[in-house]
Image (cartoon, rainbow, N blue to C red; front, side, top):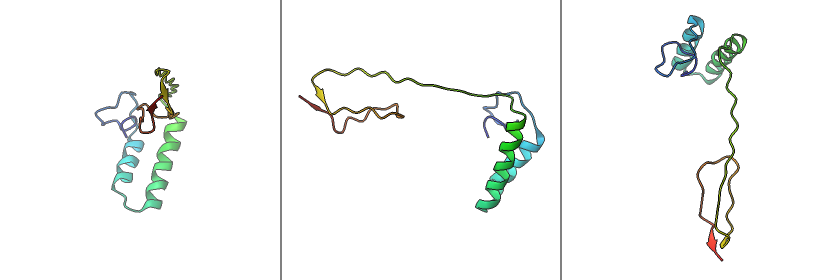
Length: 89
């Protein structure tokens, strides 16, 4: 919602589409899972066909540890480091 609803406080794409706004609001009010999915699929099709913005990101995580630390494993998609299994040599 924050990227595509024209009245959202984080909306910065500059796109205003009343049909997309209406569908997002309908989806938020709909309690049926199948109906909600159908509505949001429709929103995605409209946005895809007239996308004002495409975001691509690539993150690289660089971590330094001391050579006396054992069993440290960096999770490939997490930014926080779990030190549960880390132990000194």
